[in-house]
Image 1: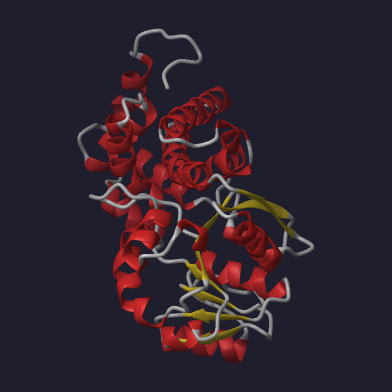
Image 2: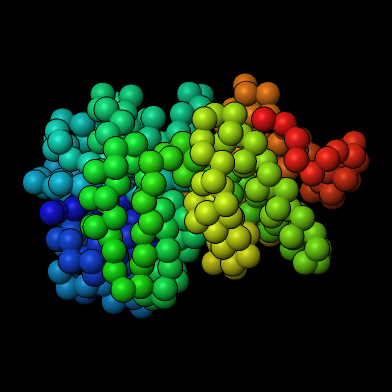
Length: 334
């Protein structure tokens, strides 16, 4: 079994490391020749994972066709809003029977498609050849080979098991399921809730407030997921609560840091520049909110984050908007 990872950011590089450690021959594609040279010659990605020793077996190339040549599994690790354009470029040379795996947690603007849907639509492949990875995947910790677990999901059980086999190591434990919808929605929504938690942290909120945002964020995630056909159990697992807790709690989380910058008074563009990497919560809050409205689902935290990102709501008014809502039972809606 051979793998290719298309995208050499922090998560793409980290997952390539996991694959190589699992004994899966892996090639990573990077846009920059400088990054390729650093990975192949120095066994390091100094831009995104400085100081992390990459496996000597991991190879890199700036030629995407060469990267995927003969691959049984191809992983995509590019920003969500660029995936469709990248797939269009890569389509002519992707192996026809390869399992195609999204490492991306986001929703596409305009189409409101999940990443697996973008892959199927752009490449005209069946669901059985498309899979996703989701869970508490803070790249900085996994790159240090700290113990972590994740979910690998494919509608076809054989595909899920193949993916599980490719990345199972002594420190990275993948669990499989067939709920692609739930895993993808969990990964997209938790980024938005992490932005809200980051704002609360910057404003000096306490643990009660953070716990409230996390648990009510989980309720938003589950309501949307149920309305869209996901298995509700997914949101109690690694791709739901697990990912939500890690992303909302860790200073390593880009989305939480984005929220902290917003909480200090920066606008969305300034916050993105300060982070210097993609924070999908800022990009996905609009499409997720559109999905919620389309399916008749209330997502008040997501509404507030979307209004803050667009500049329609001053950060100082965010808490007042949330607590002024009418009283409700703890569980309601679809």
